[in-house]
Image (cartoon, rainbow, N blue to C red):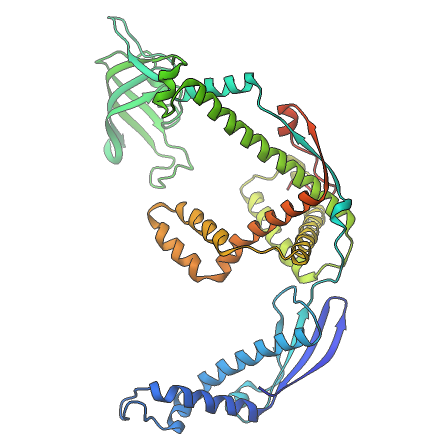
Length: 455
């Protein structure tokens, strides 16, 4: 459509363009739109497809013109960016300067200002000049044995305790029936038969398991507990309850024999196969920790080597998201001790630095990826959508369809995939020196950069 765009002002990364679309052009678009939809219209009193154009305009003209104006705003934005070879950092602000009612009625030109925040123009550092040290660690035989022992602990078997004086002790499994009551009334979900209760496993309400210590087979125990204030069932939270418990059997934990038979119980061919599987899992864990450290070091280097103006609204948006989280943590009393000692002014200053760092690094990674034609494939996105949907169990198909239909949700999944691909690209081109370290050194927390607060 006929459109005039003028450069009204520009300071730093902020640009303002005036856009005018003449009324005649808008009217032509409206007439074309009416002609397009008339054959499909079916209105009472008229033959299908024979509704007069004037009647359509009277009934739907404003609505159709609203769609045309929306398209004009989008076209104006795109043309202003393309003509001036700019890339928008955030969605432009639109300020109408014409009487919208007259525009909708076809009596006035459409005029609006576009306030656009553009991407900074900078050249990323030569990736081959980046030097990093990457800590690495290989699983030792001792670490593999420790992990196997932990697996055995998690797969404990139990054997029945026998004798006349058998009593339940810490670590024992008590098989029991119980009925729960609040204020003397049985409540839903508070009763169970043949419940397997391991004393000390902390799988029941706090205090429940401990009161079974010393219980005997055939004996009755009244267990008095109070549901936690944050209990998942809100109607039970904070309520005092009593459980009338009948002990039916007591079992003692049986140490597993670490042999081929134990491995077969876990679905593996042999004990050696189990150790090899554990070694592979540890190697994967250590590799992830190693990459995390390398990525963290890389981000520090990228932050240090780049200095360019940041889009203000992008920084404000990032800071607002961070500060909302800080406020929520403050309300829940979850602020770190370091942050509790600081004033809001000090916290705002520190978290603004965090917002600036995040925006800067995001722009750097995006620019590196753009220069190297990094993309997220449909297969990668599809896999991410499936993984996300599977987290919702029975609603998986519904969540999957929702992500397939909404581009904003897809963007949320695409962003971390893109970031990791760019990081891999940089690490492949950078000079990375591997340094063998201990397991403790590999997993120890690094000091955060100055101004990074407790994030």
